[in-house]
Image 1: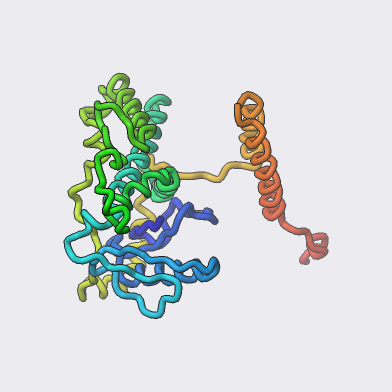
Image 2: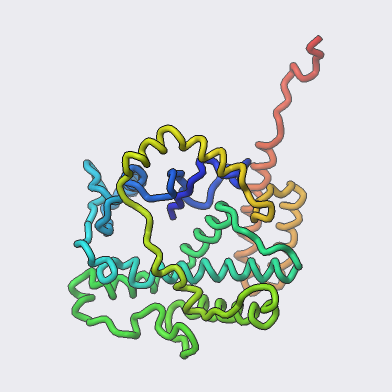
Length: 314
């Protein structure tokens, strides 16, 4: 995942050492040719380590320039105006991720309302966490079906894709018989909770279809920078960054660092839970490794004592 924002150092990143996914700043939050090339070259180095050659299918837009001298990646540019039919990502993969992301967002909203807390405004960091989680949850079968649907191989094209291969067949009130059944059912259930319990606090007149696809007509922002954009990037980007960092909402969903005691207590609760789980053994094994990692982190946090600490500077 690759998130592009306006602020170079969002306030919610303060003290954070590991981001859930790639983040870069650009004056208009656009994908640009420079950011795209940086990402592709980094990806090329990654595949060099595993000695794996790939073909990367790219939409034909100005933010996706030709990148020279790649050794492990071959860029395959789609013909103009064919993305909706030939790009596998547009056959259901992006939509599956959006459904999962918005399911996590609804769950956070419900949790806040149940605790009588203010409706949260997600920070960039919390949105990145949900986005990465949603992406990781998109099933392998969804990818397979969407590559089939785009007709990537001759063999798949000859199979003449049908409705059974649609990863979102049955979205809505019809019977759900697709590989993303769980997330749609969960989203339906959560939206029902909002309608039944919190209709007086928020507008709940929305269907699952509408919620998943509400931004489907939004134009993706990318392209070549104008002269004005370039000047703004060179002369005003730092000023814009400072403004963005200072104007954080009071009820923004900020992440605070837990204390060592809170971390230990959380692990202890999970250890107790593992005793009652059908997957207790692998869970205990994972928690054992987690304890080791926490021990190392706590040790690194401790300041190493040196002999000069025992003497006065006077």
